[in-house]
Each structure stands twice: as structure tokens, then as C-alpha cells.
Amino acid sequence: MHIHVIHENDEWTAPLLAELEAAHLPHVGWHLAEGRLALDEPPPPGVFYSRMSASSHTRGHRYAPELTACVLAWLEAAGARVLNGTRALALEVSKAAQYAALARAGIPTPRTVAAVGRAAVLEAAEGFDGAFITKHNRAGKGLGVHLFQRTSELARALDDGALEPPVDGVWLLQAYVRAPTPHITRVELVGQELLYAVRVDTSEGFELCPADACAVGDAFCPAGADAGVGEKFAIIDGFDHPLVPRYRRFMRDNAIAVAAFEFIEDGAGNAYTYDVNTNTNYNSAAEARAGVSGMRRLAAYLGEELARAAEGERRVA
Image (tube, rainbow, N blue to C red):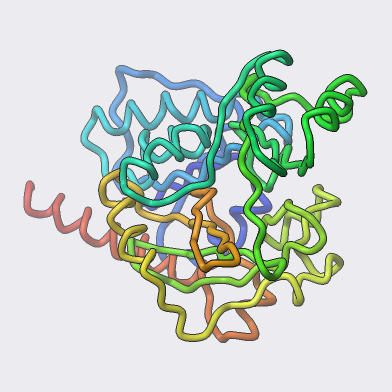
């Protein structure tokens, strides 16, 4: 039996595979940028962990999430142990779906409007009293996030071709939450348990991918040694927040095993969750300072799941 890691990004997945190797856990990488799937064949034995990313199209892997959806449905129909399966993927590739699920869970989010087409986008902008941001429904890494003070600025940006259109055609317009300091908080959970929380400096922009490998191909992603990542990400000592049990419940209700939640607090201390990442990465510089390793904990968790699956197989036999 093996741990099967489903993904489309070798750089982001390499740290996890290295930890699995160091722990002597049998594993296989499934790179699903392209491929074929025989639906009448049974899956191989083991556990399956999906790290499919909503930003795959930025790396030329436009249909990787769609292929992954087919694979996950096949695995689940066969009764395989799948971590971050079809429900997690559906939330990963649609922020609108995330906000609907967060609202159902009673977790506050910034006011958000989805729109398709220039006229609808500008009409949505008119409905905001004050500054607002635009973002892509299927995004990742802060893709497509821009701050506007008024509708006319957005109209000019659209007319000038300054904004890359969202890959699924859906724009999100969201009320701008003004924080007292330029920071957000990212809460990491593995196995639906708190790993740690990270304080992220947003003073240089919105693209907040924590993976060291972001610096390889994403020039504006503030990660990696060359991007001054040591100042961007800082693990919070002794983090405790009322949102944590709600995030854990959200994960249970939506069959998510591993995730990161990002929230921002306004001047009155109100917290607004604005992103759910079911393909999460960890920053090595911040972890080195704190003496922790997210990928090591994730590898251990996958090993625990593999052991449970193996025990289940033995009982059946």
C-alpha cells in the first residue's frame, strides 16, 4: 500500500515527498496536468491525498482540476480512502462556493458579489460604499486581487486591459476590510487539528503564497529567500482564537483533511475569513525560526492514515 499524492506542481510537492521519503513511508506522486483514467479499473491500494491547486492554469495546466475531479470521483466510488476529495476540490476552485459554505457555517466573510461580463462587474462595483477589491473566483496566490477606491478606476482598468480575466469568467468584488496594521492571519490545520498560525505582512501586496517555490516562477509572490520571506511570514507563538474550533467544524462538515484559512481583522477587532486553501504550503524560513515543520507533520499524518488503511485491509482479509 502506498500514499498517493495527487498534484500538478512538482516544486510545491517536493518538500512533502522528501518528508515521506525521510520517514520511510511508501509513496507515489500522481502528476495530473495530463493523463487518462480507465473508469472500469480498480484503484491501487493505499490512501490518496489531493494537493490540486486552483492556480494550476497559471502554470499551463488548465484542465488539471477537471481531470482531478474525475479521478477523485472514481476513487470515492470505489471506496478508497481519499483525503481532500471532491468536496475539498470544489471549494478549492471556487471562492464563491467557499463563501457560501463559510456563511452556512456562521463564519463571517467580507461582503462579496460575483459577476460575469463588464456591465455586471461595474454594476456590482456601484453597490459598494467605499473601497473594494476585485479577485478571481478560481485563483490562488492572490491572483487577480486589486484594490479600487471607486467604480471609474475599475472601468478604466478593464478598458485598458490592465486586469487579467478570470479563467472561469467569474469576477468577485469584495468590500475592502481596512486593518489597523498591514497584516493578515493564516491558520494551518492538518488532520483537522491546529498546526499553527502565521502572521503575514501584506504591505507589499496581496499575493501571499507561503511556498518557497513560489519564487521560482512567480516574481511577485513574496516567498523564498530572494523575496525577503523572513519578514513576510512569522509563526505566532501560542496562537488561540475563537475561529479555530469553527474552522475545525467547517473541515469536518466539508470532508477536508488539510487546509489553511486566512482572515483579516478590522479596527474594531471583527475577524473576516476570506480564503480557504485546501492545497496549502508552508514557509521554511518562518518554520525554521519557530522550530516546526508543517510538511513533516503532514507526512506523519499521511503515515497514520496509511496505517489505518492497512489495518482495515487486514481485518477484511
